Image (cartoon, rainbow, N blue to C red; front, side):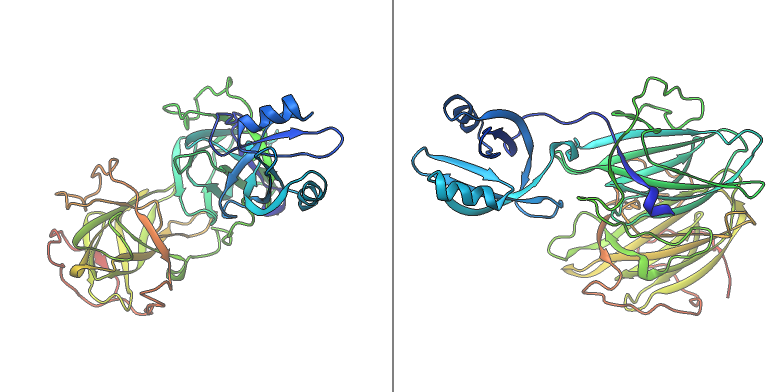
Length: 454
């Protein structure tokens, strides 16, 4: 039910700027459509050959990474013109009847409406329950090309930056009005496909269930105004989002969809190896690098404990809520820690000082999976997360980086090196038992001990 009804919602603004790879499409009324990346050739075809200019047909790419269709080319040595078509039959006709030579496949083409400028866009959806009903909770499946931050009623629910993997959340709702807001970021430096995909299953106090999906009922802004996620923010002037494709359509295809957040936990095998931007050819400089991840739970939810599986090449020291949890010095096997969170908290801060040894350069990486156990809630009792591109890092070791409330807003996001099982690490061992006592690695700040289960 999540996948068949969901659609990709995108901003209504469309990029029409001139680019060196813009593909122009003239049409000759009695023959065929032809394409070229040269505006001069388009003008000649229209002025001298009886073609009609139909504007930009798409953008070309050197490979099929973006899900484009093959674009075939032909060359006419008599008029010194290259012409392009997505139809092999049209190329065949040109070579047999019009003096062209078949020059094979030139590139892949995507239609222009799929090309969105880089940057962030704001989406909002106000939701009101049917008359006489009270909302209780929501199961949310969400993914974005390339990354997103999700809010409910002004509170951050979660982030994701590992498209094409969707994330699952379960949150409590206000009985009446609820506002779902998403900040979606399109990466790269040139226009490229971008989209937001979400399905929200809303449960009511009487057991009634309803599903909300990304569609034209969402509002969108090509900027991200301050406070856009707040309930009282006025989005009445925002245009409706444009539905560009159904779930599964090219260039996005199928997302990797996790089971419901209410009933499942992630595993270390779902996690990613991450590091800083210093990795070059699989190697990184030696030294300590701090990482941070802050999890803000929905209003009304508090974490009572955390179970962490972690490993680093070469070693690490882990902190939660500013307290020392433990260290690991062998990346061939992960360590398991179970931490009591006292006092219970709506916001959980994880900090790691990871160290790359051996030099002058060698492989470096950090991988982790975290389960936060909640107070009893209709949504279930566990929230899981893994190392991904939403974690943050610093190339130095700032004083107090391990503390709750430390300002890491200027830190860059981690670089995802690959999934669990990638080389050179392979399938590292995942323990069943909790790790024994350990000390701080070299350079790790001292901190009071966390309360650990044994």
